[in-house]
Image (spheres, rainbow, N blue to C red):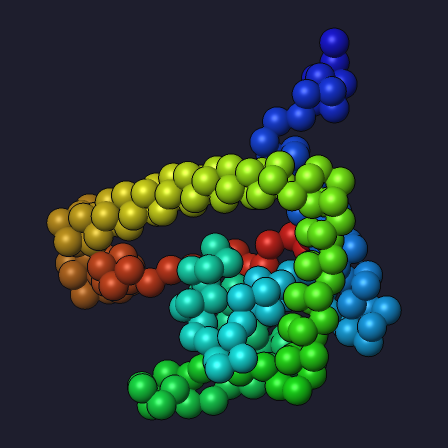
Length: 203
């Protein structure tokens, strides 16, 4: 049996998760478009799906969505330009900003919540309330386990990078390592600054 046929008959977790994600996104954003929000794209859900009416910090949105903080920053810039959110000073930290939905953003949030509730009702009616509730509990557990794996891996990589920054090769390469370009690279490692390759592929 061909691999593609086997995966079609007995889909693995990645395929099942992708099928659900893409189908839900398609219904969500096509319905939103029909209701007046045609400029939004699925990637904007990384912000709008988690945004609080009372304002959210970019770091919170990053943690909740699983997206890099610089990706969230780019998405917030796009949503500011589209008129869905605005940045305001954080009253608890004047150096920081909170992200607030505008009136347009609040309308989108209300509509998207209603669309998602309708999708869930449809599935619950098809599977039965109890079976659907069991499914969601199991799926949440799998999602938690998968996220825990990712967080453990990232913490390990950060620890390794910090160790290299404190004792590593760059600082021992000679005068250039102490005063030149290599020294700057070593310092960047020690400060833990991250880079990002850009937005994920639009889904």
